[in-house]
Length: 337
Ligand code: NDP
Figure: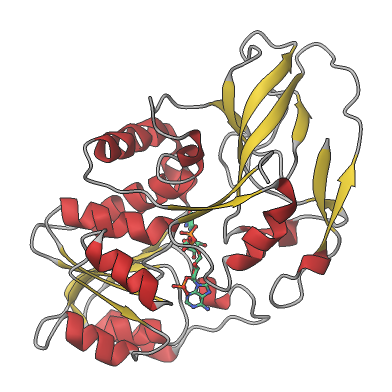
């Protein structure tokens, strides 16, 4: 099987040259081992900061949906489908009881039952990003009917789901994203009340159009970070809630600083701002997935994916997250050209 090796730590924006593809034999199975064949690989923004925990050269980290093709573990029979964290590999020899997970999630789980939905969704709306939206928004923002919600990175895997969940909960939803096509998709298909292209419209202007003064924002789902976030906080209502999910605009920076104006708004508006890592809801994982799958089957949530075909495309897919190449969840379909 082939695997993608991270040759060195990233310096600024990840480049194709940071990766190298290698082939190797997996060898014989010992008791308790299984061999999985990857169907879909997930590329996620967290891999940029978290790859610092790796010691290159080593297999690039990541999760996938895979089929068991050989097994000496009766819990994972041949033909069963799993969600695993074996990095960017075509095939993996794993001892499920020994595999460590990414970011506190289990290293290998049987794929949750999602019926006729595409298994790729196990990496998106019915997987980690889906639960990030579900728990990270509902538990931290505690949205109420009629409240105003703002989401940046709104056309991505997590953001697009947060917006659709907020609509289910009866909120007014405004989002920002990096292309006109994304903005159109958010308003025409995802039910956003308003969206704007942050590359063309300033945050001040976009928020004023979305929530004309004196209206303010009750819930802010933060995916992006950087200077614009201070402006969002300054437009919040008293006792608003901020769910700090990520700060993708800073992931390629060497130094991260928090604008002083953030603190000002927090105090004067008595905001509640809370960061989270989604494994916090590990014990409720299936609850989120079942609910997301249900909403999808009912047509209340429309999951979108940007699928690149071919294992060779994995670095390109990952790098594309930082240039905004994806609408919805970015995944790689292995074994397809
Ligand atoms: P996305 O699908 O949103 O992909 C990344 C998107 O971010 C791109 O499509 C791009 O869209 C946007 N982007 C990239 N660079 C910038 C920039 N400099 N400024 C503004 N936008 C940018 O990824 P996910 O949905 O998987 O992740 C979204 C966020 O959630 C990330 O911050 C991630 O780290 C975080 N996260 C946190 C988790 C947790 O447990 N706390 C779990 C999962 C995700 P555009 O065209 O709009 O610029």
